[in-house]
Image (spheres, rainbow, N blue to C red):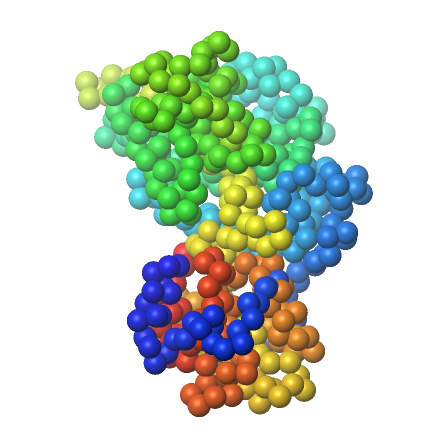
Length: 475
């Protein structure tokens, strides 16, 4: 964002910093929604909100138990609404943000050769019994029976299903490997204590990728390729994740890494060595270990939220389900496997947790549900004559900045003051809020532009607004 503003300041006839104006008083901001014709207007948006702190209650009806910033803010502004313990309705703004996150994930996975599939959530008990995980996962599996008394579970992950699918392809050749298959679907886990909103829920969205290679050497290359793609994803989102050595747990395999987002409410603890960059979940270390095993330097401990997890599986599942391929010698061989997860809804909530203030949501730029919100003057005010200018500006933006079509909202609640609507817009964290205030009556008209992620304000002509917004990246 700094680059965008720097570009604006280089246009002396277009931009004036508001703090340079006599009598300038800093504003604070808050919330918005779409609708009519070709314009998206806020009054038509389905966005239930509880903007007063005492209206936001936990499932038990006690606001005091909302100890997580992201949960409180997402409930407060109407991104989510609880359906039952650990299960949430995702409302329009949250769905838009999540769909954008999925597009970024698709871009990164397909850039390394990933092919997207979609497997049933309903998984046969036979597959899970074959891998011995039906009993291993115990109460964590959500189980059910059909009318024929056949047992199923709602899949928390799909190692068994994908391996059985690949095993059914009897003519798979080494020339087709590596094979990288992934999906983004709902997952289910019978959490004993769901909490923190989307950070630990019973139903959630996950990206899970499964890879099949012809040898351990190429499988390790694929493993590192996917880990690099994860790092690229988090870099694009502006999230400072740490790749840490981790336990393989119930998934199994011989190697595992977590991608941890450092945050005080994190339920995981990991150790870091500032000297050699060694990092590991404390579960993998000896309890008495205080020095780094690589360089003997001191370890520091940090809390984090696990937003990604990778596993090198070897032939753990391919040997069970006989997932084979025809090798270069024309003989059948077991595929070497890896599996890789990203918590989609968890990434969304974790980003809000680490980027937001106590009162206002802040988004990774690529994930903001809408990139800009336009606020016309209050009805009956002296500036009301500038309302038409806002409509023209909206139309001009969507005409000459094609990537922002469908990304701009008009707050048409003109019965409210500009200040009240600005508070709402600040709460929602639109990257840019554009206001037609008193300077919109000048010739040429200047619009007050709030750049939320940098907390800066500039005054721009229509041409300056267009130049600023034309640099915005969307997915």
